[in-house]
Image 1 (cartoon, rainbow, N blue to C red):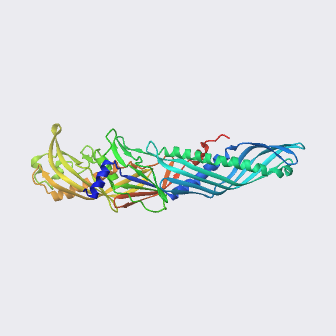
Image 2: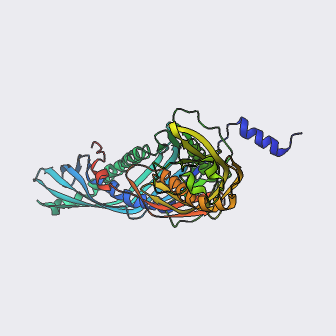
Image 3: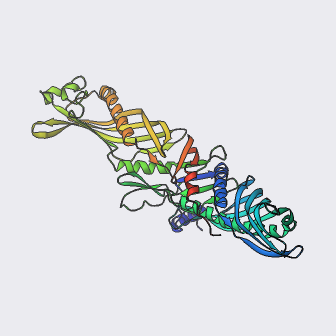
Length: 481
């Protein structure tokens, strides 16, 4: 009988299991913000849609023909609106006790009189109950759909003004129901239109980000959003690959644990796996290769053979004239990134020193393995990019090989190493200066961001705001009456 762990591991491989390299959490705080701002859009859409005319007849001291036209919602107050996550897939929008004021024109025809004027309709007890299903769409982005909607307008009171309104107010009860019903018929379609707007915004979710001209980050969803009691989690691939190269093989990533708090609208967890995948990408680029020549750095010490006399006693025997030296540092394997309470990067590379002879002939002077440990001293969010800068913690030589006789390796490591530390850190930070694009949608800004690092995970927390609400209302669709 197979051990349980072996069966589990076999299932991971055979069932196409994929673990998220990045998890994005949308909290109740963000959903409350969307409801707060969305009420203005919903109100705007209602106020720019006329309700259908009401034409009919009734009997009050004889037959009375009436027409109610130009019915417009002038005020709508959905102040008691809440959004409630409903696991495992739905989100509930609940509006209760809302008020509205409707204006329009009336016209009546009676055997005694024909008249017209204006009316005011006060509506109260408006309720709206809508369920939205969270989805992963065909482009592997998050999306939503309206799965059910129910609305009710409980109370309506019409008051006519102008003309002989004192007389016509006697039969306003016959008008209240059709106007109330017409308004009720508008509410759910308007919710559907708001959902259409939200779907279009979610369709701009960044599923592929350019890290550089040849490298992309894949932030596509690996499963539908997971709705929980107070938040919605998005499991993102968080893989990195070179343009045109085959997608990296799926790897098991330990679960990403995000804070169980509502203090921020958005949390993003980046796994250790994600950063090591970045390290492999940088290993394939020139960021982890440094070359120092006298032409580039004419004032730098250690770029001529004469500079080495204190640590290589026989250097003049090999090179009587002080010749130019080229130093190269090249990583021979991807760096290893470790997340504990800080972000640490460990690198191993080869330091080669070559002497430039006449006619551009090159001779090797020495080589050594270099072990370096870097600490991220700055990690912050800037313009939707996660930016990291390093300082060096340790730098040491190992397996030193000399081609110019005896070398005082300890002194060389102390003196040359100090200069190399500075240039290596500068080169790495320069290569990382553009930052790592984070998942986002168009026209949003992240504010009040903070970074925390826990074992195996870097967590970004922030508030997210949608900037062009006024432009959004200007482009809101208008339903036909």
